[in-house]
Image 1 (cartoon, rainbow, N blue to C red):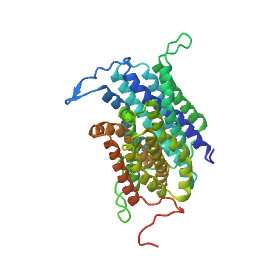
Image 2 (cartoon, one colour):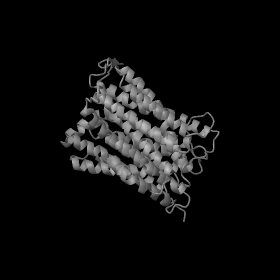
Image 3 (cartoon, one colour):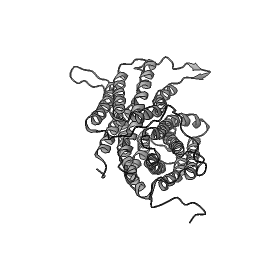
Image 4 (cartoon, rainbow, N blue to C red):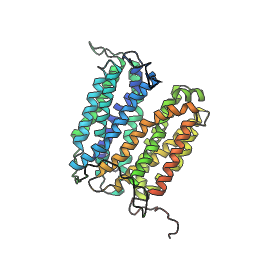
Length: 427
């Protein structure tokens, strides 16, 4: 498929099944917390004078996964480098995700749900950086790395994009009565999440043969290198790619929190919002593979810079448009810009990774993306109080900052790229 290593395709399919399971919960958990089936004693309480609204409690439960997941990714990526093992970490993480999906059906208080969500976040920390590192390890040369990540991201985003749609249908279709059993819509949705994680576990267990990986003595220092070679760059290029990924992820996550005000502003219903939300994912699904392949021929930096140039106006436009169609166009351009940055960014970090350290290096980007998707909803919720356009203007400022950093601090990483970086004063 796409001329890609079979194992990369299997990993992509496994990640798609896992993404369906995780994206199910993005839709199901807010509904579950607000359904009345769960005891939420903290609602209405205050902390330091700030009221704990139901919306805030829902946001905390959703963001907890991202914060814990991202915080532990450097550790799991580093340990997988030191042991030279990826598969065992992926399988362990998927097993944790399966068990926690089952546990949701048995919790009856908000506090218990938060504990399950925290454990689930730790399980995700074992899956994400090691899977990305294994995709990188399976690239037979630098000229295949962008294509590998393009295929992987395409299937992952398919799962992430369609999971919420199926989740809504499953919850709405309940209750279910298979035989003598009674399953609420929520129980059925948690069951589908378990099934997705188990499918992913089976695909990795049966069809993935781990390649020989050079182990690395990465030490115990989990800090991220910030300073670069001052003769060429002030900042470490992997750190800059991580920072750019964080800023990009924040812009992606700004939108979901603002469903009601966006619908009111544009005079549209939830169907339009769903289409607009999915537009970013759809654009990525269509473009990840061709952009990844092109980045293997033409170089990483032209796509990184071009995508970030497009990102700022695409995000800002979402705060200025006044019709559903123009919002859809802005969201599609947002998706194109993300596609131009995502796979080439991962490929560039893979190019820069020392032998045996791809888990450690790539975890910087996966950690940054996770933190960005956790911070984005909180940022838009706070900034919306200052005006509708403010969250999107904030995202545009972050995009410009990412552009400046990448353009000045990241050099082309692909040897023999057709388009090299132009340096003033050089022929």
